[in-house]
Length: 626
Image (cartoon, rainbow, N blue to C red; front, side, top):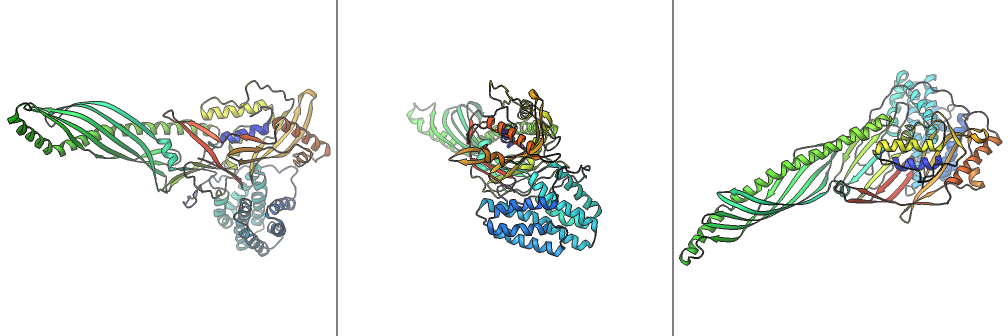
């Protein structure tokens, strides 16, 4: 339950709420085209206050990676990473470190999720470094090119990887633009790696064919009367038509493609009167409609539908005006039966044509209206709201296989970075998979405009308002009757006030804030806090594991002052406030969340989904609903 007294829990709630909407995939055999991006250089940024020397930052990053690798591989990683980032070493020494690091990465256990993540993180660093160093060797002794490239390498693969701050990404984009303008050979060397690892799509959806069929499914039965002249006979009676709609996904690389399939069955019982006979007929007709449909990530389009009809009429009775006259009865009935037989094919052709004339235009009209409404909702509601908040995706990719449709998007400003390719995940057999990178959720958080001195209820109101605009319905995150009894306000930094980092099996909330207590006019300087929240599936339930607030847990927070030197008193005060807030927010060591989700479909039926997979690794969260 969300309590309005805690920014930590609010951030967790906003993550959960925005996951489906912050608009490669689970089947990576499809080719994702290279995506363009804005290359305008960001404005110059101010130097970082209290920033540690490069060697210290590199050493901290190396220790974190080594801890994941284990004793033997970890002991090799730290000195190799120190060489890799040491601008004083020769290009050949650093490239040899690249080679050794790659060997370590490829030797890691790929059956272990943590080891796979570590391998990806190492290879991401070495890919950028190898491309840059080889280009620098070709550039000779261009001192400025080396300074820019070495700075970019550290800012990108050490600072940004660990803090996901826009301040760091701004510096990276500025150096990247400088290389493009001044040293195009170096720029062209690292550009493909940047596209793959830092400018890729940061949100992916994969939809299975059974799930798509459920979303578009429609079943209806329609009854009606028959009264018309057919082949000179006056035909009356009744008919009933059953239709069902499903989807059939088809392979496509330029867009997601599927066919809307309509299966229909019409039965009729009629009597046709043409003097001197009345013929009783049972009709048993089947038809199918196929309509190609495409989705490019933002809108649906369709092709003309084709319809196939198989009509079958069976004579089940015959009555003539001469049935009471023994001599004429047989003769007249034989003539009538021959007439019926001669006109059977013509009558079935008429039945088929009438079915097509009635069903096909109506189907085209209904489908056209539905997709028009869907496109209007996507463009004028969803994307328009995202554009107004500055977080509309700029790039899309849609494709499909025989069994799944995948849609990817990238949300990235000219000052930010996005994502590498996501971890490989088996495509859901009957559900939908969502893969979101931390850069997408951080873009959504930035749109909230959280900065400066704020009460927690102001933060929650801002999140509620943003979600209401997006979902077009009321959103309440605060429990009814809950009153704000907090005496502490937050003093957020102007930028990067809240950041999300997806580590192995946990979400790390990075807060850059101070605290203010109006009652006693007490102010605690701004610090950087990293609050880890474990998330996992246990026995079918989603479990949230808050950070421990015992003495050891609080000491592990290690808040870092943003300005000025750290003092024991200020750090102790910051820890004390953090403990107070965490204790109020999380009263239990384990929070269980219902993994079931019920959605109401257009036909008023319920669609029940359950979270069957939840993985958090190397900047990505993957959720599979079945």
